[in-house]
Image 1 (cartoon, rainbow, N blue to C red):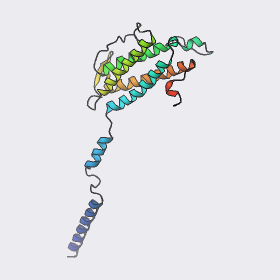
Image 2 (cartoon, rainbow, N blue to C red; image 1 turned 135 degrees about the horizontal axis):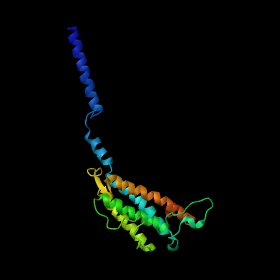
Image 3 (cartoon, rainbow, N blue to C red; image 1 turned 120 degrees about the vertical axis):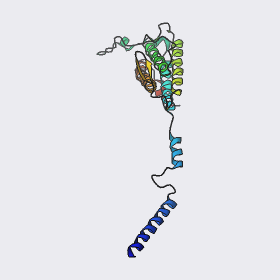
Image 4 (cartoon, rainbow, N blue to C red; image 1 turned 45 degrees about the vertical axis):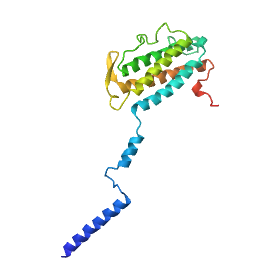
Length: 208
C-alpha cells in the first residue's frame, strides 16, 4: 500500500510538472512549432536573390570604373609608365580588361542558363570589332543584363544542376558565383589603372 501511494504521488507530480511546463511554454522543446517554422521560412533568402545582390554590387562598381576612365586612356597599360623594377609587359589595356570581363560574363552566364552565347567568346579579350568606349560600355552592360537573368533563374531545385561550359561541366551556382568573383578580380586591376592616371574610382570617392 505504501508503494502504491508513492507511485500515485510520483505520477501526480509528473502530470502537474507537465501541465506547468505547457502553461509556461505552450510548445515544449522538441515539438514542432508552427510559428518558429514560419519565421525560419521568412528568414531564408532565395539562392537567386543572394547571387543577384552580389552581382548588383559588382555591376555598380565595375561599370562605374569603366565609365570613369576617359576614352583617350582606354588603351592605357602600366607598361607605358616605365616604373623601375616593374614588369607589365603584355598586360591587358584598360579596354581589354573591360571587354575580357564582359566576354567571360557572356560565357559563364549563358552556360548557367543552358544557352549558347549570343556573342563570340573564343577571344578572351572580346570581339575586335568593339573598340569605342561607348560600344565597350554597352557590351559590358548587356553582359550584366544577362547575368541578372541567370541569377533570377537560380532556384533551390536547380542550383546544383551540372550544365555544359566549354569542354566540361559545372553547376549553375558555381558559374554564377565564379563570374562575380572573376569580375571583382579584374575590378581590382582596373582600380590601379585609374589611380595611375590620377582618377579616384567612383566607389572610393567620399559621399556627398
